Length: 123
Image (cartoon, rainbow, N blue to C red; front, side):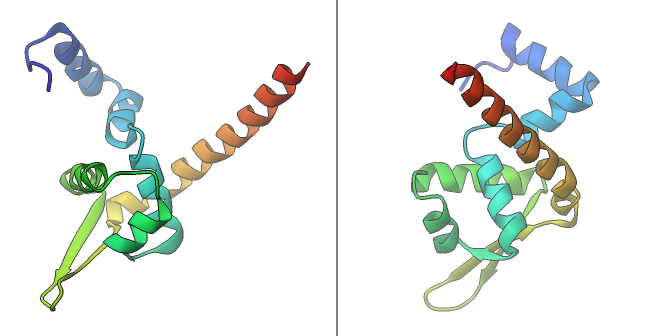
């Protein structure tokens, strides 16, 4: 964990306070958040075990950490059912659902860029 008063942390804080895109990327950035959001967007409510199977390369520790961050940012809702064994489900919040068009556009752009990049690299 980096210091809160480091130049890097202060710059990040300033960018997030003044740039909507920077703030958005701070919320959805990272290796696994976009994958988690995409799965929930496609499937609706998912149990933890379903998310784990859908994203097999993520460790349990990282999946839990990323889900907690998304929950703290009010993009994902965690529901615990008092059963034995306990059942935990995740879904996008109303706020998280508003990201659907943006995430789709980012995905479409990525697919286009990957095709162009592959064609360029094969020449």
